[in-house]
Amino acid sequence: MGPFVALVLLVAGVVIFTFVASRYMGRGRTQDVERWAEANGWEYVGTDPVLAQRWSGRPFGIGLDRTARDVVRGNVDGFDMVSFTYTWRSGAAEGDTRKLGLRRSAHVVALDAIPGEPVVDLSPEGLREKWQKLFGAQDVQIDNPAFDGQWLVRASDEFFARRALDARLANIVMLPDFHGSRLRIEGPSVLLWRPGRTDVTSLTERAKRVADVARIVLPMEKGGPRFESGGTIDGFGIPGLT
Image: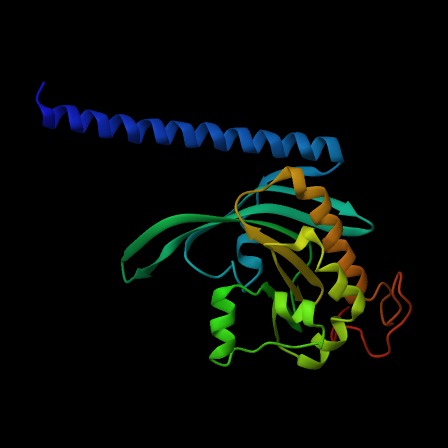
């Protein structure tokens, strides 16, 4: 056997091993999600193509081959919740050809509701976000140095964003459960996501945090600004919420 043939066989073996290992690990993660759902009274759905198209902000609406897998649905403090692994491939379609890149994933925990307006997006302020601010990217400031230094805030309605980001919400998103995550409010929908596949070890707490945010920003009673806790805030209801 010549060196070239040996090299080809070695490369083929590595590729096959990587493929088999990734399939095995994927099945293991799915079983973890199924067991978590059964233990916590949630419904394991598996896949739901509608979820991959429901939202438009990052991580949604980019790349190709978008899917939602490891989907589970449940209820937390009266809020219908959904958790899933959103996957996509970087790349673009050009005519009849597709240029595919790496497959990426994000763990999403959200209120199981159709998104709307207004939109408030909170992303951790890393190096990229600091550069974006230098070049004029929107950042709603609330005069809280700790919050303003950690989060970049974009909003379709700055007035609503300032009202939503009261002391309660600003304090909640400073908790460790939000570190490394992005939070977005889209009308009656609230979603929390971070890179990577579904992590069942943090799913319970992340779902509770989404409920905490929803309790602040969503009216609990149709047609009125009354909240389940924290009193009332005049004019704080989301426009168009039914």
